[in-house]
Each structure stands twice: as structure tokens, then as C-alpha cells.
Image (cartoon, rainbow, N blue to C red; front, side, top):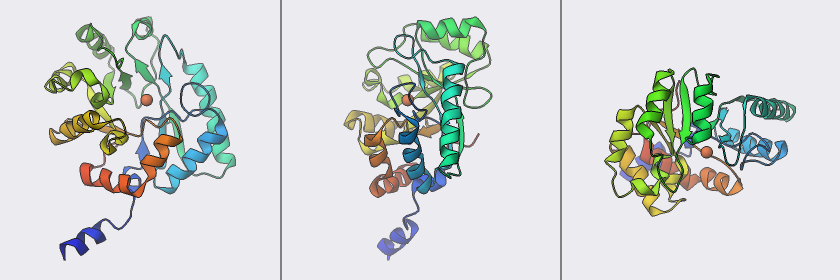
Length: 244
Ligand SMILES: [Fe+2]
């Protein structure tokens, strides 16, 4: 009986149909380490849309040493993608922000006074280096908050230097960060310690937002696998995470 009920409740409606909006992806063609061209982006978006995602905030990297994207490069790629999806007859909503590495270049941009690219009016998607955390984090977040941005930390579960001391997550919350976890982390795609950290964040109600962080076909095929979709539902429940 229970088995039947569980089966019925999980009748194959993908998690993406409940999520509807992705707020972290590298779908803008040709400007970072994500999709290389519009054709690839359209094929990815078609498959995501078929699974239920209808809105995409594309977030290319802005990273001083590697990807010095700016509003011009980003908006140009967004226009190209909008045209390509319309030509392909896809009914999806596309917009763009960025994923800012908290490096010296970011501090230059922040201090320039030019408005940064945000997910909504205030949500600023940020990432840390994978080798070491930013050393002056308290100062950086103070400046971000002073300029009326709401910092969002992308994939906190992926930073290995936090795994031995998960209490640091609460400290980051005290600095003002919202947390966006990657759905792929829940599958073990990035390894067991990352999966465990993501489970810890969910269990302790520290997750505010979720994203695909989609870069390539390898990510997409795992995300769309029916076992992954069922797992996302099991771990994240019915809560709608990206409503803003
Ligand atoms: Fe990303």
C-alpha cells in the first residue's frame, strides 16, 4: 500500500516542473566555460523546457583572471540567445545576470559605483575560489551589503575547505549570504563530501535557492535523468525555492 502510494505520488512529474525557474546557468553562448554556441544552448534549453523549466536567469562568470565579461558582452550574448530560442519556437523566458568571483577585480567593479548585474533588484550571485576562501570576507561582504546588494553564495557545498567545519556556514549566513546549492551536488556528481555537505545544508535549513549551474552535456544528462529528478524531490520536498 505504502509502496503504491509513494509510486503514485511520484508519478513521474519531474522536479523541474515544480521548480520552473533556474537562476544559475552558463547557457549564454560563447562567453565563458559554458555553452560554446547558440545552437548548443537552444538544444539544452529545449530539453530543460520539456522537463518543466520555463525561465532561465543566465549567469556567466565574471572572473578577473579568466572571464572579464561585462554588461555589453553579456547582453549581446543574451540577445543572440533570445533570437535563437524564438526562431526555434521555444516558449521560455530568458534574462541574464552574472556569477561574480570575489577577487580583486570584483572589488574594483564594486567600488567603481557602476551597478552590478543582479538576479533581481538586489540578489548578487557570487562564488569563492575552490582552493582557499577569500581572506577578507567580512570586509567584502560589508561593502556588498553597504551598497544594498543581497549577496548569494553559489554552491557553498562545493568548497572543500568548509567540509571539516560545517559550522562556518552559519557564520557566512551571519555575514548576510543567502545560499544557492547546485542540484547536481545532491546526486554525488561532484563527489561524496560535496553530497554530504549539501545534505547538511538542507537538513539545517540553510538552503535558500537552488540552481543547475549547467555548463555542458555531462551536467544536463545527469540533471534530466529520472532518478535525479526523483532524488531532488525526495531531498528538497515540495518547497519552491526560486520564487522572487
Ligand atoms: Fe556557475
